[in-house]
Length: 283
Image 1 (cartoon, rainbow, N blue to C red):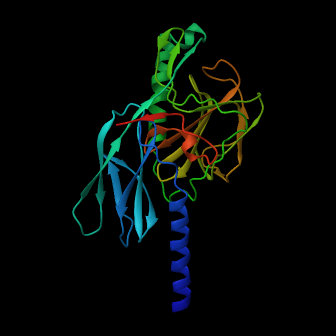
Image 2 (spheres, rainbow, N blue to C red):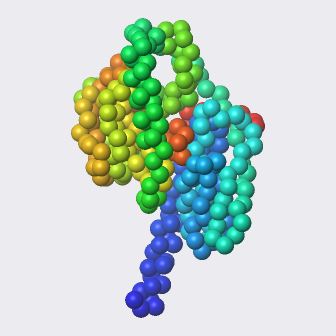
């Protein structure tokens, strides 16, 4: 390879990486949001971790950034990650988690979907363990883009993070975006990726998990039909199934979750026309 060709290739790589860095999801450093932590310049990509969980690092030699998904259960206050660079001691980088105010959502469903029978409870525990393994997926390369498109059109229900009360009983907060749509509406991949899991789960109904790379995953559920299988490569906008009303639902709609380093974060942070579903207050 000639010197001019090498220079062009390096310029292309830096330009692409810089474009990706400018394409980052919106920062919203609250529970259920995303913190962007500047790691500084360096010839090689550093490794960043939150505890034992690997983090997505993007950028180029001019500057690297760690994207940190903040769990909904996180407490406001100071937090930190550990950064490892070749030939240097580990470094701690700190950031601050602000407070968020989420609404309450009260829903009425079939009694058996709240007070589970022993058989259903055992099924749920098996499915929870399985999906925890799915959520732990971390693959290379990093996503080609962070500019996602909603899997279906229509008005988006701003219920991410909502404190959910089913039949008068408090349950886990809502960890995704709901988009009402008629049964049978095509559901599309919000960005390119690879299918890593499909199934019919007790609460989620028919479900598809997509790996976008670097610990960034999408999950769409309550589907009527599934049109893909684990291992399938998907372009952005590729059809994965159709809207349905399977699992614990009150009617046909799509539930879309985004997981970043095993934390469910607000999908609206990845949409150019979407506002985050949280209200930030002073830390």
